[in-house]
Length: 272
Image (cartoon, rainbow, N blue to C red; front, side):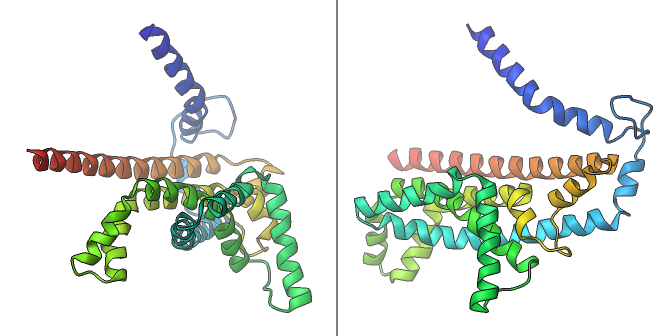
């Protein structure tokens, strides 16, 4: 049965990554023709780095993704710690509320945030024009549940006596929190940040409703280009983004794997 499981994994991997492989190959195609290879060329990469609209949208996307992911990670980690300290009934209710934005269709979230920003500006006088600020706020909002759901399992695995032991050994509350609790839940925090960054980088629907004319993200720009014709420059840009994200994930996984092996060796030495 091993050959059957390997065949299944191979077919599933091919189904998932074959379209990306085709995109990478055609990013080096000399012609604009879709589905026909006419020769190897890097002209679309050269044109990509001279396309101001795409580069500006890419810059907006990266800036919004980094800022929103950092704030979502900080707020989400604090929220997860607070939820973990609640009583069982309150904790279960808060977790159910946390799941709602994930289950809820993105178009509903996007329209709701758009109406909220419009209402806050017109009725309360505290709103801002649609643009960079509304994009960041919206991305922080929909990224929070993913950070909470990544940090919560690490908090459940955390031995509650470690925090008390650190205080007994001379640490105050803040020192015990930053030197003991944070390192223990750091894998969950990093995973939450990476997931928030990925979702922010990829988001289209919510960004479409809350972005202004001067602060469009890359997915919104690509969507506007599809009304005419998608340029092969998009293939080149998608290839670069895919390779960068893949490299970051590999580096993080290798780092976490080495750290886990070091911890395992340390535990074996302590037992001896």
